[in-house]
Length: 444
Image (tube, rainbow, N blue to C red; front, side, top):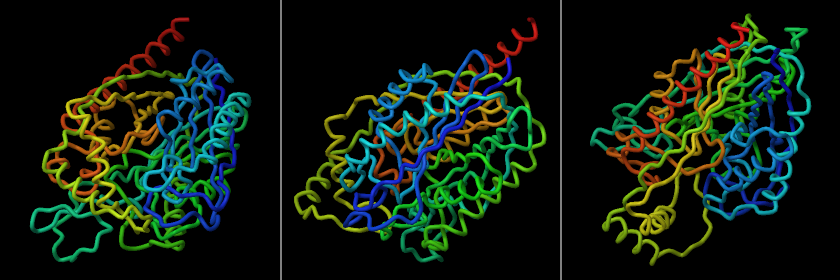
């Protein structure tokens, strides 16, 4: 059977005057710089159906992701485990979880109706299609954001630091741009969709911005759509320790530069894809794991109590980072959970030679790299902030070093090992399933 693919798109821009997410902000949004969208691609190989949705928001709670997927399953018949709700992680979108300011409940109600709608649209529009895959690089947008200082500390790349005190970044960013180009079966020049993957934090616009925007991935999608036709879906990766340059480009011109740079890398990669296949197999799989919750120390608890006792509890604006109050509240929230496990679900999807593993949170880039390197697939991508969000998941090394995301984490070692092993195991299973499907076909 020939591959069928359907594409859907819907506007998910909030109304002006709601809270925004991703940074501490002292007041609600004041305008719309660019529209936000949710774009969906449905895949069907005659046996298995799967749907990827790219949402231009910071993230979704696990509960909301589960509800949307359950609703979409009822409406389309596609199993909820085969539906991937990927969030771009823009820090200039509506407050969908309310990290630091209240969540925008009115917006969430609208969004919970719009997402099943776009999934249904993609599932209804299935048509014969072919896909081609390729990968390139973009080295000017993403940076490793944890910097090592001469005195052995870690500072973040947006903090005010003396440049001569910096030794080097404490790790490597992931510069890979992954592209899946989807074309009409009868006309390879007709692009139905471009799915592109890149790993970093879309927060060129800082907490001092009060305009709604998809940030640079939003601009990149618009440019790719204009240049090549069809829909352009951005997927983020294991971006927990990767970021934009924290000290430059932090304005709309910066969004313009980074958005165009990413779009250019995507278009160049897509242009180099010459081979398209329609006999592509689709498989999915799931892994349920548990990782240890962070065991906060008595010293941390003492500090947190002192901070909260002195807190004024007022809304403030920060360019980046979090307040001590935020860290203190997290410590008190974790206190009764000492010794407990956090359940995690990883969802896997392989479309021919390209595989994806969803991750419901912000996985450190180096963990993502380990998983990619151990994968049997030609191209492998972590879909970060997909199907929910459970916070930062730092590497074992980073936890020992300290720093921002380590202070705001909810987990402890050996989390990195548990996640890596489960993800690689899932990828190997998917690889075996694809081979089996191909074998059965050639036997028949």
